[in-house]
Every structure is written in structure tokens, then in C-alpha cells.
Image 1 (tube, rainbow over the protein chains, first blue to last red):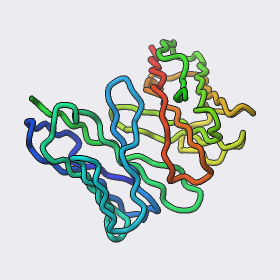
Image 2 (cartoon, helix red, strand yellow):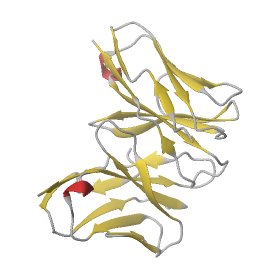
Image 3 (cartoon, helix red, strand yellow):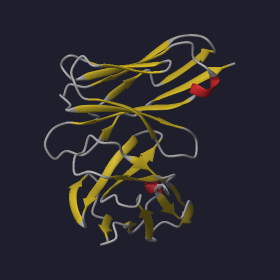
Length: 111
Length: 114
């Protein structure tokens, strides 16, 4: 059972377009993180959100944590080829549960 | 400071063999987690160690085992390899007992079982 469902699985867009990827769960998470992974590398943390309704911005990337802390979204404005990669959401539920990952959204931005 | 180091980077093994992978966390980090990444299943949690104690274990068969040493370095072992064990094995280290802090990943070990 995948605790975190990400959509879409694949996304191919032109440079300059906007996009949103989603991370959904039926479980409540104490925090959610977004990572980006490039070929041949391990995932690198982009952001951590911990409060329901929280919005964080990182240059052209906007991250939102749902009010009920069950879902999150990542919005990229004016995508660039350098944004290409695998975007992973990960969350910690409660207590002693480990950090679990969604399967990811593979983004390709074409120049 | 140096990042998370995983060795070896690439490995080819035959079915039935066993393999040991190594992970050196960032200096000062006491938490090490292991994940298996495959195209179909994504990152699947294997186990987590903190100060030499296994804190959590994922839903993998007993052929998968791990340990952590007093210097926080960790190893994972897979015995009786199967073709389905082919994957990228990632190690992540953390500097806190709290789990919602950043996980720093190594580049992974790409294991191919033939």
C-alpha cells in the first residue's frame, strides 16, 4: 500500500509553461517534504512543510500543505529545462514512523 | 563538509550470491536510513538506525539485514540474491532524533542481479 500518491506520474511541458504536481494521502502527516532527484544522484531536499495550510516559496516553486495535513502540491511558474527531474514527496506520519516516499512525478521541460 | 558516501557505486552479482553495501553518513549524523528504489515501486523504506539501534524496519524479507557501527557508518546485506533485488539502494543520514528534519542522501549503489 502506497501511503503517498503522486500525480501525474509523468509530465512533459515546454519551457515557460506553468505546472502543478500533487501528493495525496488518506493519512495525516506531521510534516511533508519535497525532494528533487536527478539521474545518477540521490534525492535533494527542496522544502519541508509542517503546518496545515502552510505555503512556502522557493524562487519559482510554490509548495502548499493541505489544511488537514493529508495532501500537498508543488507549483512551478515559468518552467525551465533546469527544472527537469524526478520530484518526490515524502512524509512522516506520527510517532515513530519512518519517512515514506511517493513514487514521484517525472518532469521534463523542453527548451 | 563531506556528504553521504556509499560504496560501491555499481555492483553486478549472480542470483543466489550475497552482497554487502556500505554507507558513511555526514560527520556528526547519528541516523542512517536505507531505501530501495525501483522504477515500478519508487523509494521503499528498508530500515532505519539511530546510535547503533534499529529504530524501524520496512516490509522486506529477512534476506535484507543491516547494522550500524559506533562511528555511525552503516552496512546493509542482502543474502540469496534474486533478480527482483536489482535496484538503486539509497542511504540517507540525518542529524536529529526528530524525523521531519532533512534527510541527506548519498548517490546510491546500483545493484544488478543476473
